[in-house]
Image (cartoon, rainbow, N blue to C red; front, side, top):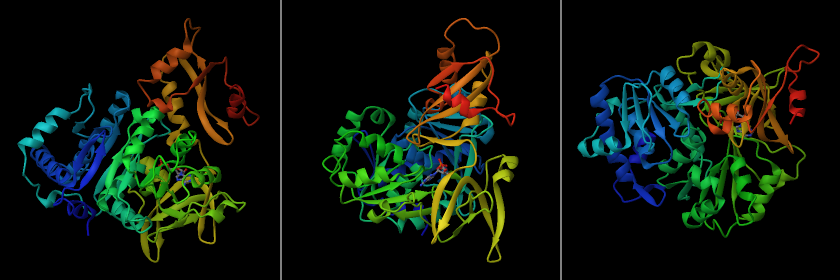
Length: 491
Ligand code: AMP
């Protein structure tokens, strides 16, 4: 059964689908409001299929809009409201979106064809009450269901296109791995990150409650824990970084989340120390480590982490591959290649970049899509182990960042001649980013504040280097390349 039909099958009861800031959205409201908004979109754009940007954070209207887009025949592009307008503009132009559904509290000052603001959407939903979109419009099969924009080394984000078949396959596979008795899923990741696809769709398809926490709560541990206490969360979905942040407080234990039964991790290395601490604080939980890039629909391997794995000398495995995919470890480089039905059809409107990392490969006489992850690893007894990266892509507090993305944006500043960004590690984990800059001319004033403030208009805040140092010239190593090691020693 199509997963949207499953989600809608819960609408005849008063079941709650989403909780955000003490406000409930029922499955019935999710269906009727997304139907109304879909009819509204069909009236505006007819059979036009251009993607739609959904701009906001954790409001109920985000989920309503996602479903409205796909019911009216449009892929949705979730963009978090923390994204600066220059970056939103880049996404608007590269995607060719004609409509921005603006669920943030701010007006958007960029030249989109149509912008529907929050209050208008609410009005339109009322105006189109009880209207149902014709099913023939709905996104299906190999049509693109969502496009997630992720950091790109050119300095502009790249749009990963995920089809309805890809997400259906992810849901079918992951539903079998988790405890289905669970009733309340935590949503921590913004909807613009594909980790949120895991909590959102597993929760909705299993008829559970999606419990969203937002960036303000995350910035204030006390407030976050007050929310946790009353949440009843049974399934935790996050990057390991977020759990590590919570573990810093002794209060993060079974008493705070007494219903918690399973933790699903993805997006970064899950360390043994983190698992050990979690099992001490929550002795009854089950932990699953998922692995995969956005380009292969959230995750393609998974494994339940058992106590005995903590005793092995190896790092924790990232899992067994799902049935409709294959993992190939490339000879010489050890790069992890993913082949199969989960792989994206490529980057939106970027055939050159798509050709660079995506490929086709025959498996049992059938041509499948493949993706070069840029990750390195090995397979032992059918289990995949992740080792590292072959490029300058990093994970910082769970966020995927291409170092060159930041450098290219710093170089856009008129007073900067050159810039190199380096990750600063503590105990093998990246703690923050730092940059050295070479200036065009002598500069009066506080260059560090100026760089940081100027970058706020260009980059999301997690990409802005914490430390900035002005140097005369970039150091070069014996091979004639920029000496990044030496630059790291500056900090
Ligand atoms: P994203 O597209 O944001 O999901 O990031 C994908 C990248 O995160 C992968 O290519 C890996 O480098 C990293 N990653 C994802 N899952 C894991 C994991 N379980 N362990 C280690 N690294 C991971």
